[in-house]
Length: 470
Image (cartoon, rainbow, N blue to C red; front, side, top):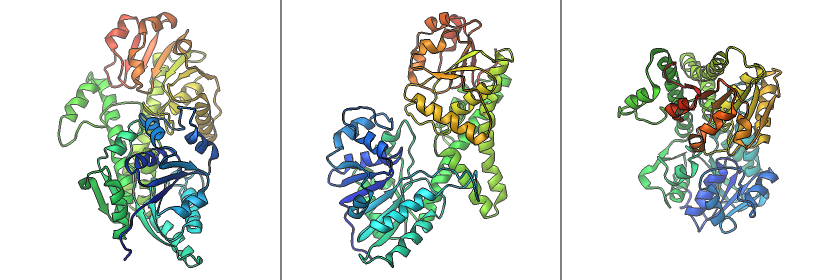
């Protein structure tokens, strides 16, 4: 047994959407602990260290304020990976785990190259006893891979390094990440070494009530993350399925969602219809679950979870087809304004955003697309559309532009499509916008955030997801 461990210095490998915000909150709540965030991407680290700019590489409400308070005091961002690993008592691995694009398990299994590279780097530079914590969203039994790499390195090293491996998955909702970190529903820690588990638990106890810290074996912890995201994605697809039935029958999705959500057995969260789920985790984690099921010959379970992915893709294409149909069956050379490219409000993350796929469909139909978003850059949109074109091997029009000026985007437009639920879109001068658009002027509200009666007074033709056809 290892004697009680007191953490003084921690290191996080990966300065992305999870590592950056998580370490900022830990630094804030644990002022006596040195927190180092390391990354091989120098530009990203430079962005985190940019004192003059208020724009961090990641947008999350209240993140910038926290970073400004603790950066340079006990929170540091660095590319000196070797030194920071050697100094650390505990190391979080929080690197990207994208879905494999080729080879065995392509399209479903996670690409583990960055996790393995991180483990090998830790094995090379860590000194003494080091707790290694999985923070990335990982397939079940990944800890076994990390453990093998670390244990094999021990025999080759002369500094008597030894390791404890823990799983501590994140349950962050982008756009609410800081709130989720400060007031989590639960903190899950999986592992075999009780002293290492308690050391990490003590870190969180600086601000998280003890009853919210759940301790499991390492495999249960890893599976719990996949299962949680799969259940949430399932709810999104379920309510979107009901929205289609509402459109056909005359029911209203907002009323149905309220009625369902008041059932305490179900609850009201994730019952808001929309253009489908996006983000870095839902699709990837379900595909991981499908791969896991097929590996163990659990084919009925694999088919069940795979259907959630298939429905989400179909739902997005349904919206694209409906837009074409409403615009007289032809959108070639028609100008369409896209309001929102991030996969949800209050983030600049576009990974698996429904907007990518819907814009792709409309471009293939020959539309002229004008895109607006409050936080996403033109460069990111260009990258997303080019990546999709490369992955699908489909040649599509590049007839799109990005403009921060909303009025420029809607000038002579035939339609506006609301794809991200930015609060600002609710309060636009829609009367002014109506005078700039071609007639008939359509608005497709896939988020159900606009005042339909007000829009109709200005002469708009309106389609709202989950509302009866007019």
